[in-house]
Image (cartoon, rainbow, N blue to C red):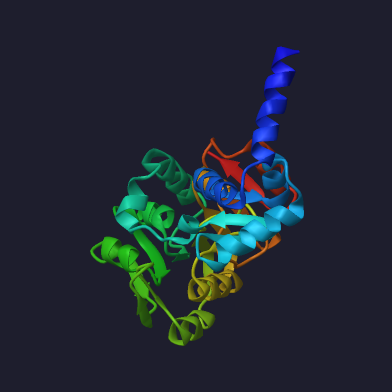
Amino acid sequence: MVKYIYIMKEVWKMARLNAHDRQSQIIELLNNNGSMKATELADYFSVSRETIRRDLNTLSENGSIKKGFGGAIAVNDFTTLPIDSRLLDEHDAKKRIARKALSFIPEHGFIYLDTGSTTLSLALELKNLSGYTIITNSIPVLTTLIDSKNHLIFLGGECNAEIMCSVGVQVIELLKTLRVDIAFLGSAGFEQHHGPATNAFADGQIKSCAISCAQTSIVLCDSRKAKYSSFQQYASWNEIDHLISDTDFPQEFADKLQEFTNVILV
């Protein structure tokens, strides 16, 4: 009975928050969780969905959050950190993912390496190997492999300093003329999407093109990407042959994705 009274008091306090205080707490919740659905926020604050929609509209208009599909996403989810910082994050997991990815590459294979820290981990594994043809628009992948004993093709175009890669029509038109055994792709997050996603529209166009040029498409990402959302979905899961992630990937989410693609956790 005492516990019930305490819970009811907490619910009452949440319901009596003014709009400003509630919106401040929404920002804090999103920063901690990455994204939340409007229904979850309505339940948390014990208010109507319409009240939460008004809150989200206000916060979106002043740039405090990004509205997503049926909910909201933290602004910092769309901020691309320097690749050196991202490479250090979940370093051991990314190394395991990269080593598993190696097992898919045929001898003397032709592969496409996407931008991102997990695909860069794969480039670091390939650095001491030889005999592969590696196509990329990633500047860090280029600098990592330029002295290796592999055949390296860089897709030149307009330089995007934020995601450290080349983008634009030139990249896409050249990529369309190529065929590769495997495209290894990254993702910034996909919690509220039905496929892998990216934070940059130009990057998404190139990822989509790479999938169409590849016999096999494999997404490489650490498990945190299952808890975040991004700006643009660049493919559906049924267009992806394999998703390789680490064992901290939410099992319920992995089981759901298995209906559309082969999920491998290492």
